[in-house]
Image (cartoon, rainbow, N blue to C red; front, side, top):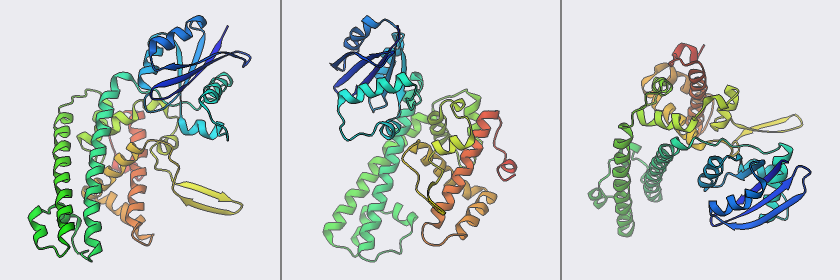
Length: 341
């Protein structure tokens, strides 16, 4: 007999619910997050039980443990679940039961179970991206302090070259000078940590031909190539270039009502690390590829306002992501002629 199990996973406990093929609840219990306890709970059902788990931040241990014990496990996308099962009354018992019911009906919005052996390096690359983002926020904080006192003449390059001694002549209150020096110290710490990670990552050797193909992309250096490679994982999980671009969060959202269509921000679905990586690649590519710079400028000139360049860069990032999909599918290096062909 086939059974279906929903596990509502939390940081310390999990609510586990099992139903039969008719949708009737057979057994449920609130358990501590201990793999042995969960396996003991499932033991009476043998291996004829299919399991669905929501993709919370701590899913690694339980998915790996259950799969290694021979169970069929499906990881459910959190946002997709909320769209399907959004309810006024929400409890752990109901969530586990709903997971089991959706699994029984074949309606689970599945998330990709990323290969266990590749996760550590992918997570390290994500932590590096987080440090880069923190450093960018520090620079942004400095610019905000300057703007308050109408000191808007400094370029981004000049801001990045500031030294603590430079604030002796900056006409802002002493209290803010001390704060700005603290920000510079934080930037120095973050930069040192990023450099250490870069040194480690540059020593990572990958013989996979797919990775070497990614390094031919415009604007993609070694560490950025690693990020794209590890975030994509298996390109075969994407059926089309549109699906891939959407996963990369590079497709604008559309709001349509009757004959009115409004384009704007997309949803939070997808991989924001890939969006960041392809946007970084686009920013670097325009420096060294005249054709790509011309493409970016053409789209920027069609728009007005401060966001014109940013939007144009996103369009170029979308173009590079599309090229990445075809390169990985076909096993061929980057070809600029095909990009605009």
